[in-house]
Length: 121
Image (cartoon, rainbow, N blue to C red; front, side, top):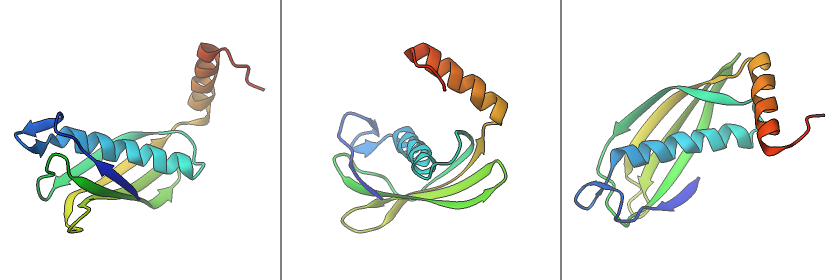
């Protein structure tokens, strides 16, 4: 879980956080989650966001994300964004990430290493 505070400069409607910002934060948390579990690189194939109530500017929220299942190259996760004071779920999400094929991962890793001047052993 992570505690977040959203300011007042990223609103979509006066005093309300833009929904795209909450989607971005949730999608990014999925990436951090699978990387923290040492799973192979993966990319978002589907992101489902359900807005339950507005996230008010300057509010504190709790973001909870977890892995639901891993089946072959498919990684399913879910997350909630909750008001830190009331624990009310404001945003719910599910996602499907797809792991890169080994050959694509090797090409990508070489490109990243070349870009940063690293040598792959």
